[in-house]
Amino acid sequence: QVQLVESGGGLVQAGGSLRLSCAASGSIVTIHVMGWYRQTPGKQRELVASVNSDGRAIYADSVKGRFSVSRDNAKNTVSLQMNSLKPEDTAVYYCNADVHTRTALYSAWGQGTQVTVSS
Image (tube, rainbow, N blue to C red; front, side, top):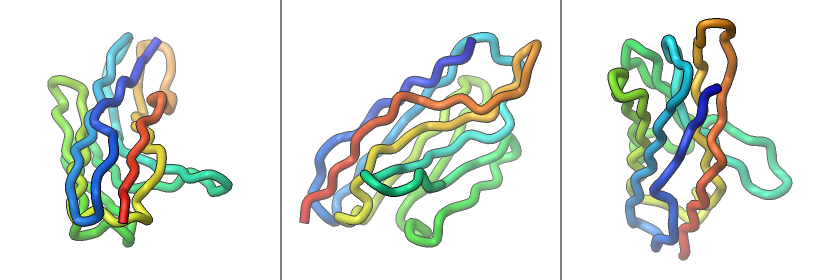
């Protein structure tokens, strides 16, 4: 019913920048929180940054001051600007949205996009 499509991953050298984007589509009434998670092999998926419909954002301590999350409520999109990237930022990044449809409130996930930071 709801699809999240991510774009913008890739390979970058340490110190470089990447921008991830995510667009939600489908039977959406409203989206409460949109955000980004990341996961590396053998580890749990962790929150990177999220932003609510009022624009209030929260960040993982490891990315504060380097990453910036933003959303466009009218377009149902969320972006993650990643600066000063480090090798430890290498992971699969997933877009997430808490979506209210006409019949349910649930958490939707994108398919994931690989971010690789070389040293």
